[in-house]
Image 1 (cartoon, rainbow, N blue to C red):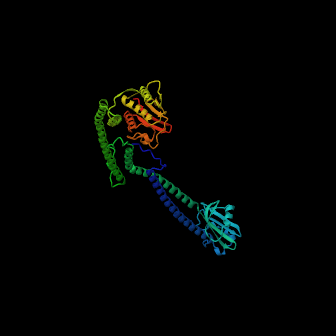
Image 2: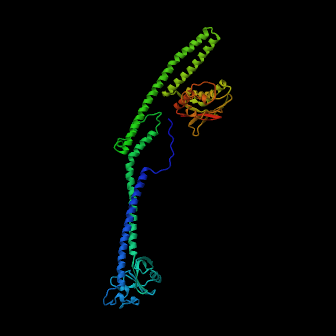
Length: 496
């Protein structure tokens, strides 16, 4: 049986790798959803808190409490009084937190500004910050601005004709809190995904082990040459992997049933082949006696009877057909014995001498062909059966003679393989070649090459099958390469 050629597939990830990737991606999506929702929720909450602080700070700046320090109500405040009111400024209003920003302007000119620091003092704003704050709309809406003093949420209120008060609270703490949240969520999500990938891969690998064991059994069976061997009894899916209640178990159970069915079919086929082989051997052996008797009686008639010309012609046809039948029976008997695997009569065989003698015989038997021989100076010997190897050479040479036209050049060559472990016998001719459709079955029994190559001699279709059987019995190989103008049979025999 010819081994299946490997099929080329596009590179793909293994199943457990894909499952691990899906697990990690799904976890990443979950972490992303949780992280985004947490970020949005916390950001909204923090900004609401900042907005509340801004509203309170703005209210305290515009409407300071009425007491001895601030006897003047906001309704009577003049813009020039933003800088000092009984010795107090806007940022001196009770309750203002550190980092609070205030600016008071009249007719586009800043009269008071500052940022309350942690020690209770005030830091002045830069000119760029002042101009940026003066450009804000005085509708009282909150606006985020980036100043030299930092990020602020500010609002601007008009307190009279051409006068405004700008109040702001810092956003840096809020931004830092959100940045920490993003870092924690990102690092935690990454760690969770890495852990899930490692731990999930371990679990998936363990879960996939039964399927890998089933696949291993199937692979081992696929690598067997079922044409010459049975499936070993121990090559089955283990019992733990054949529980039909599980997905993998059902596959393992079905594979075991398939293996048993295949093994049963192989046993039945082997039994049939054995019976046929015995039948062919017995029939061939039994046919030898009547064929010899027919040959003997035909010779007796030729020697003792006066036959007419037609009788002589008929008797000649009987002799030729009897001889052809005898050769066919001998070939069948030889094939049957080879199939039975009978022990070879091993000896040291000089292939150089064997090849030369057979080529010389064919030069005499077929003078209408041109015979060449190419052998090394030193003899090449192999360990084999002398008679059977001679039949290999003779059959190949006869095959070249029978299936080529007169004048064809036939070259017999002998050499060693590159490593010196094999002897190579090649029979090459420059005939018409073998039909490509016939080449795959050229070594099949009773396959006739008459349809593929020219020639007049009839053949039984057993010559090349016998050659193949003998070569394989010697643990060798035979191959053919043919195209119009060049046909080459190569026999490779191990020297040891």
